[in-house]
Image (cartoon, rainbow, N blue to C red; front, side, top):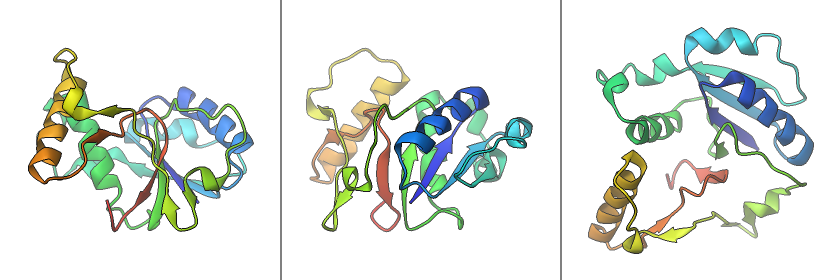
Length: 168
């Protein structure tokens, strides 16, 4: 299974990959999406999982105003466009650079008997927090899902999630 990280914190990501190596034996390859200026940090990085690096600039070149976006919008843009890259497998794990497993995790944690197990933490219809970029993103997501008549659960639980490109 492939794992994908979007990161501008190489030291933190390298530490996280050490945890993934130890506790997620089903991970067989990975992709790091990072700004070009940070690629040098990964040149001598050694681990059992082969990683390729995609330049953040290659993904963001379609967005003229990427650097003017708030954190939530940048994150959404990168994640959705990352999944469109040719090197990304039909199924993959999307993770944050500081989401570290603390014990052995089997692939069945994410998929079992042909069914996906993603982890939500809140019903967005009840979201009543402040109005920072994350909260606004959660509230906007709720409005879109409600309009489409879909369940409105938040999967922004800071846990790695399995992604199927066709469904995504």
